[in-house]
Image 1 (spheres, rainbow over the protein chains, first blue to last red):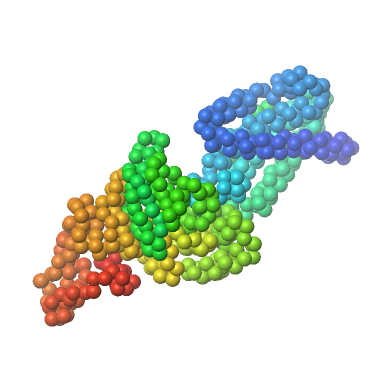
Image 2 (cartoon, rainbow over the protein chains, first blue to last red; image 1 turned 180 degrees about the vertical axis):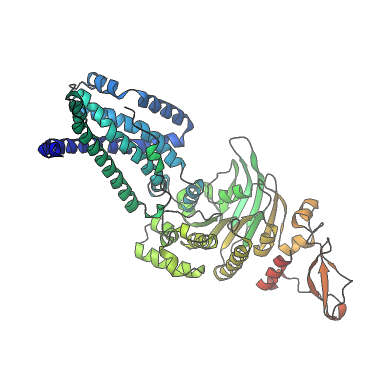
Length: 224
Length: 301
């Protein structure tokens, strides 16, 4: 506790950095996965290709990603962009499958009847398919959120891991308290993100009480 | 008036769902397409609002070939009610009813006011307006479906087994409601069902279909009952044997004005007016049949 108090500026700064660096990939993952998931659900051929491709992407070890991305992107190894891009790719890899499932979860009956009463395909996507895919999208986004927050720590090995710095520093100095503080604050951020997502879901999908899946958040762990 | 002219539909997998089908559906009447599953009746229905386009032949609404019409516009002026209501689960009842007017750009206030009136029309309490469909019973959902179908005051109402998924008591209720509504509104209703009792109850005209949407017989319920054209029809409507083949039960004493009727298995099925022991000759015009007579008919079967 005393250590925390003395280093509050450091921990607070790292936490803010952690929030910032993990929020971007989560948002990018969501936005990119919606069209990709819709395509994957719509056309069987693209589904097979996409799900395989993104499945393979997710198996690339994160550390290897962090180290090789600078040469691909032409950035410096210490540039935080590397970590953000890598995490965004992971987020998309998880979310595409989830988004495809989300669009598949929209009842066919409802799509048919929406077409029958005269929705154009564009208005049907925005007013029917996307909202009804919402609960499953949200469930998957919560998985991505937790994964991203925890995976970001690995970036500390290449100098950009926000709270991950406390793990490496604490380990090198053989100082468990610092590692502990790092874990606790990572956890707080993960829970905070999750609660924010749940709250957003409540506001946007008041009709979905009881439909929302939540247990899946625990079944996919970090890929570190 | 809806007219099918030599319409065929072959699906991508090769099945010939509809084979050279021609039919004229008169305005302001209820025409019921009835047949077993897979006979193509739903495909026929969906051709009317271009959910399905025919492989050959043409369909005309009021002498206008619908192949030349924009599908979305066409659908917005045709009411559509389906099994399981097909309501949007994420929209409140009032928004579901007002769906099409809102899509058409009708101001929200007007669309809502009209939707509220429609709830009255279909016999739903206005207090349900702010519920979500999942908070309603199956019968209530179906009523909302009908209200939505009527929202743009369409001339044509397509109904695809709308009462197939509700329990028999609620179904009977909804059927009566539809008969009442139709007397008020006089829409051109095309109704699809596999239930011959429902077809005879609701249809001004009934079209019995065989595989490939081949018309086995068409006519008023009385015409079909009186003269089934072939054995398929006779069996389908149950006059060949079974519960519609009724005969007078001579073994029971009657008070002189009613005779007991039994079906072919010998179960009592109803009574017939027989003043002085002679069966009365009723007015045979179908127009004169009151709703309650129709109900009795269905109840007997």
